[in-house]
Image (cartoon, rainbow, N blue to C red; front, top):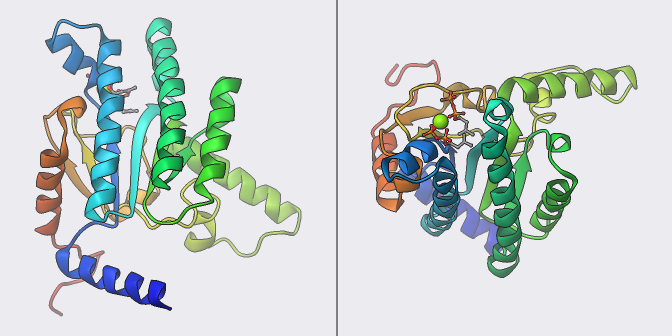
Amino acid sequence: MDVLKNKIAAAGERETSGLPRHIAIILDGNGRWAKRRGLPRTAGHAAGSENFRRIATYCKNIGVEYLTVYAFSTENWKRPPEEVKTIMKLLDRYLHEAIDTMERDKIRMKVFGDVEGLSPELQALVARTNEISQRYEGFQANICLNYGGRDEIVRAARRYAADLAAGRAGELTEESFGEYLYSAGIPDPDLLIRPGGEQRISNFLLWQCAYAEFYFTDTLWPDFGPKELDKAIAAYRKRDRRYGGVKDP
Ligand code: IPE
Ligand code: IPE
Ligand code: MG
């Protein structure tokens, strides 16, 4: 009962403090960050991965409930094979570290994306992170790997069609369709942040960002620290979310 009461009190506080429950971030600008320092692009990916850990911990500490990051898109395979190879190696290392951190700090972490397109080693790590995350409650980080918003929607539609043909699915509604997405059971992002200077969505969370507030900054992802996140949250707090309605009818 106390747990429930605390949860309700925390939700009330969030409502008045205007803290987003769910923050989504497009991790962009790693390559340019490295180039500006005369380093190979891959050094930027390593710095970007470190920054993910820093920001995830910060989000957890300030009371954000969900953090979803875009780390590798279905379109990123178009990059030079050497770059893709290094990114995959880094992912392997960081997923290993993430598993240790999850077990130590009891945090949940899920992977969204077409996992079957990843190496068997990465697939095993992804399965392990998904399994560990079922043990814990509280803050959840979602990492989008081999993720594309259109791909996610098409896959969901296929799975719904299969369930319908098998007599397992009822009428299709926005709510029931949401259950077929990687983000099933998770509230939509309140705040979508894109560092790195570009102002586009690049196939990220197309369905879920229907009413997200967007925040763009020229700061490159490896430099986007807690202070930058505070600025984004401060900007978000000033937004007037109307969801198509009117504020003072
Ligand atoms: C984002 O950084 C990481 C991935 C897409 C894998 P980029 O590699 O896109 O960095 P820029 O945009 O070239 O600076
Ligand atoms: C978006 O960044 C994808 C990820 C950060 C994983 P990109 O660098 O791939 O996006 P574009 O090519 O600038 O749209
Ligand atoms: Mg980029």
